[in-house]
Image (cartoon, rainbow, N blue to C red; front, side, top):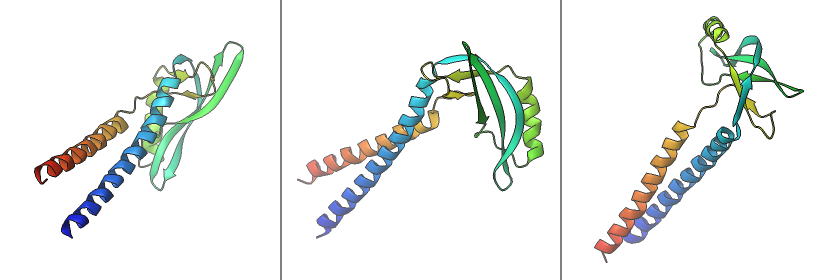
Length: 151
């Protein structure tokens, strides 16, 4: 009886871990696709910096951009979602420093409308994936070890 309960618990935990691995894998895949799609870069003109309130008392800087590829002009708006501030004044102080930096836009050569001012490799999601796969692998190894030991 206890063995059947342990087996059900193990299966439940295994499928929970597998679901987590699949979820993180899909999210990582999306971010990696975006990272590797933005292969080209060019000069960009930034205009109209502003703070955007994403939650109460939480602001991010945003900017409108324009860039030219051949005779075509592309435009968009970019939010620095990883750069958080508690108020709009602190956000605008950072914007003053951002304005002084030289900027380039990363874009897809096949579809220049897919563009970003920042191209960051998804290290955090990659580490999460490695960790969840390690736990999943250990889980399977430990089950096999116990099965061999107790049979």
